[in-house]
Image 1: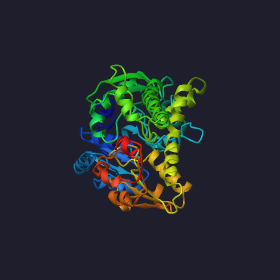
Image 2: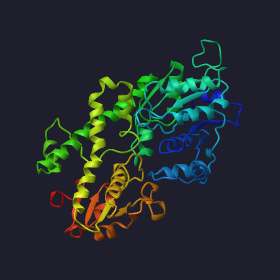
Image 3: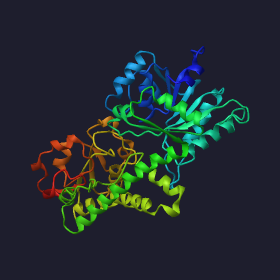
Image 4: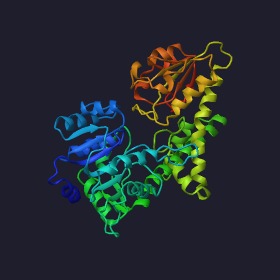
Length: 432
C-alpha cells in the first residue's frame, strides 16, 4: 500500500483511502479493483441513479466481470458511492473530457472535480488525473486546486503544505476492462518526482504490468499518441474500402491477401470510428499543434466522413420505394458492448431517419432491452425498436452497423432479395 496513503489515513478511519471521482466506464472498474486490494474506496458521481446502483452492488452498464467485483466490494464494505466528495488520502479523477465544437477539450468536468476535491484537502494528498487529456491538463487541474486553495502548494518550494499531482491514463479495451486494468502496463507522470512515486505506489497495489515513470505532459501525450496511431491505421482501411467499392473490388479479400505480406497488417474497415478515445483523442493533438498535425487531422477527417458514405449507400438502396423499411443492426461503437459514445452507428441511424422521413427504421440492439433503447434514437418518429430477425424479415435494406456476435445467427437465406449494406464484412461479397 502507498506510504502516502497510509500516512494520510492512519488515525483517521473516517477518511477513505481513495476517492474515485466519476463512476463511468473507467472510474467504476478502477474503484472496484482498488477496493479488492484492501483499500477503502468511495466512488463519487453526479448521477444519483448511478450512486444508488453502485451502493446496491449493481453496475449501470455492461462490462464483463465488473458486476462480480462491484457486488463483492460493496458487500464487504470496501466500496461505497456518494454524490459529494469526502476526505481521502488519494483522489483519482476519471471524468469525461469531450471535445467542443472547435475540437478543443472541454475541461469543465475536470474543473468540477477540482471544486469537489479542494475543500477536503489538508496537504499531503495525492490527486491523479486518469481522464484522457491534452498536454498540460494535469498542471491545469493543479492550478484549479490552488486557485480554490491558495494555502496549498504543488511543489512545496513556498513552504506551504503540498498536494501531489500526477497523470495516469487508462489503457483498456471495453469488453476486456477487468482483465486489462490489471495486466496492462501503465504510464505514470507526476508534476514532481514525489508525485510520480506516490502514484506508482498506488497503482502497484493492483497493476501486474510494468509501471513506466515520466513527467505529466509526456504521460498525457502518450495516451493521445496511442489512439492517434490507431486512428491513422483505421483511416487507411476506411479509405481503402471506399476506393475498392468504386473499383468493384472486394475490400475484405483484398486486405486478406495483402496481409499475407510479412510486414503488412491492414486493419478492418467499418462505418467510422467511435468510442470516447480514438474518435476524440487525436483532435487534442491537432488542437495542441494545428500547423504540424496534418496527417493526424486528415485521418480524423477520413474516419469522420465514413458514416456519411454509409448513409448514402442506405439512401441509394431505398431510392424509389414509397414506404421503405431499413433494418439497422447495432448502435454500439464496437462489438459485444453497449457503449454508444461517439458511435458511428448512432450517427448513421439519426442521419438516415432525418434524410428519409418516409422510411421506417427498425433498430436491433441485442445488448439492450426495449426499455433501455438509447434516447439518442428512441425519440425519433420513424425509428422503432425491433427484434433482430423480425427487423431483417421486414426490411428492404439491411444495414449491418456493428459486428455483434449475435448477428451471426441471421440465416443467409433471410437476406436474399434485400439490399445489404455490410459495413463489417460479415456476409462476404455475395451480399455487398
